[in-house]
Length: 316
Image (cartoon, rainbow, N blue to C red):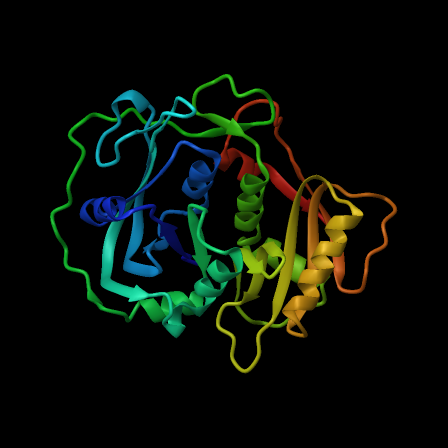
């Protein structure tokens, strides 16, 4: 199933570059590499700037550029005087224009993403995922995008595959194994029908309906890492809250998930806490479940996102 994301843009100049080049760019940070791995080929994106959504694109290419000192256009490195560090934009998504529009997030069609942003108090992350209902609605907004000659790189680019490691990141292109990366791996793992079906069956959910697996749903006091819900709810919805813990799960994690389950209300059929280590003795409130995830590969060595995704497994 194709997914839909809104990519946050920091200023008008960057927005114009994104629109002119039909390309999204992300910085050389953990949030940047997270966005690059989280958004897949075939997914749809719009740009988010100034409380407005711009255009609808399909992702047709991905590239991570190695040579930071001589990056191809359109983004220029940003130098920060106070820290003495330079921010590069090595992660790029090549896009195909599908529809042209400039619409405020106050439109009811953007209610899912607008609520997320309101609860967060702004958009300080690289990207936000919207649901299938939003994608269907934006797919008829504005007008059909016309094929235009795309601006291409004139500087040869050396590409690389970003890797992740629990050890010290001594090698260029290797990033720390943070919780947002695990969240993305588990979210994509749950997109596999057989994995999602097993999780839902564990919760006693056997309805023959199509579900979607969304990232980071905001609430008044935080946000759940993964939200599973009916992709096309009719009459009623059905949801499952999933929290991801890098390391061992604890009492506070269980209590937090319980609050999210209660806030979602009677349409939430339970919550699942996914952790690397599950305590043997812990009291679980009604509707909250524990599951363990693990990797069959050595995390002290550098691994690509695809290698990690292929080696993860869940134990219920």
